[in-house]
Amino acid sequence: MSLHCAAISFLSLSLEASICSINEATNKGRTLQKRINSGAPSKLSTEFLSHDSPEPTNKPCFCGRRHFIGASTLGTALFPIQPSVATGPCSDYSAVLNKFHPPRPDWYEEFYAGVMSSSTESYEAEVAMYKSQIFSNLKGKNGLRILEIGIGTGPNLSYYASGSDVEVVGIDPNPKMEKYARSSASSVGLPPSNFEFIQAVGEVIPLTDASVDAVVGTLVLCSVKDVDMTLKEVRRVLRPGGLYVFVEHVAAKDGTFLNFMQRVLDPLQQTLADGCHLSRETGNNISRAGFSGVELNLAFLSSATFINPHAYGVAYK
Ligand SMILES: *[C@@H]1O[C@H](CO)[C@@H](O)[C@H](O)[C@H]1NC(C)=O
Ligand SMILES: CC(=O)N[C@H]1CO[C@H](CO)[C@@H](O)[C@@H]1O
Image (cartoon, rainbow, N blue to C red; front, side, top):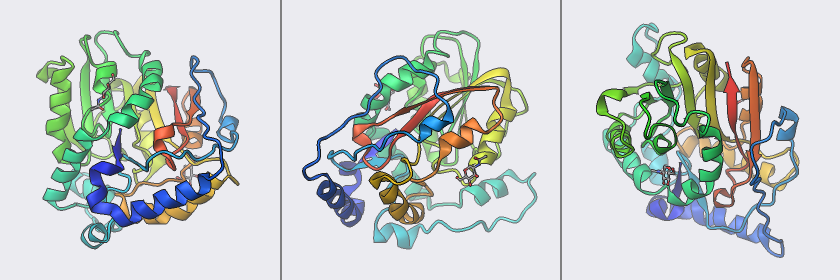
């Protein structure tokens, strides 16, 4: 899911203007390239993460989920991402939550949830093809219990929760997402009793071992504090043979212009944009997380500018 700049431009005009103009300048005289693999997902090993250098595209500036949302001096002053202050025992879940997701003001979480629910169309339209491929592993299978980490406003529910009697647990650190996620769930026909929302982080999932058939996560691992801890939790809650279905943006290949820009922008991004990292090699983390099999594909989304490429696929416990 993603935010288009226009939706939040009043919040972050100056940063976006500078990013967009850098982007446009670098594209002068270059041919636009869209690296979209339109065929069926193929099995790729992690070495394919080091793919050919993608050309930045000359599209309007893109803002991904949790990207650039706080990208203003206002944002910085009001919502610095602070290191953990929680020291309590792990049995106190609110302390855990505070550790991984320091509290933001209530109105900010409300605002963020509202923006998220209304401005994800262009990205969702482009990513739909890839999501359809990976979610076909879940669609139409009755009786599944599915966990979505970072469910947000629930844009993926239509891919895996419609027309089948699945049970869905959605976790998200922002409690203001619940009403949007609930409304997405009911709009795809999921009975309210089959949907549970829990305010939680991926690093400490409040479910028992081997208790779900599938875990879904899209554009989540860029923002979690600890990628490996989250993946360990994903494996823990999956039943043996269960699936982890993912779409994550990852660092571009070393030595490319895009990778350079991601490294330049990353520290800014982390501070201003709710902890999102541009230059994580999340595909490698997924491949090394101890799953028995990983099908990992890469796609380059023209609507996503610096937030590319995207690794998508399925991992099997
Ligand atoms: C996972 O990613 C982090 C950076 O986000 C990196 O430091 C770490 O080494 C990676 N772990 C594995 C197992 O690849
Ligand atoms: C809120 C949102 O982005 N929903 C998307 C869910 O997925 C469908 C495709 O199945 C998209 O059309 C929606 O835009």
